[in-house]
Length: 110
Image 1 (tube, rainbow, N blue to C red):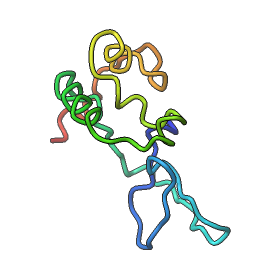
Image 2: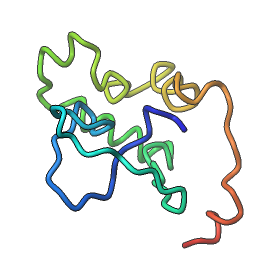
Image 3: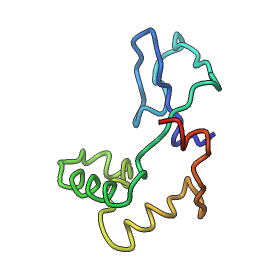
Image 4: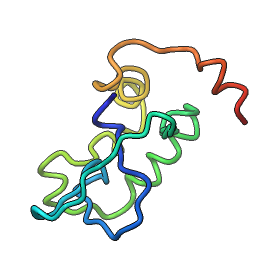
């Protein structure tokens, strides 16, 4: 499980999410997440090189919270061109330096 891609996605109660929706931010009465291995979240951020680059270029033009920028939040979304973007797209730290073929089950799921 990649903690940077993991997100609680189904809920029957209102929740308070932390930055990036990767975890819950709440007091001691916070519900416990239940992992269901039959559910699969497919993160499509890098599904297509040109689409991803266009999306990054659009997002880079938006006004970003100065505090978030200082903390490096969403820095990956500000990589828009050249080697910086290629490094993000092909070698993002959470992916390591590997790519993988789409699993046959997923390839034919849609």
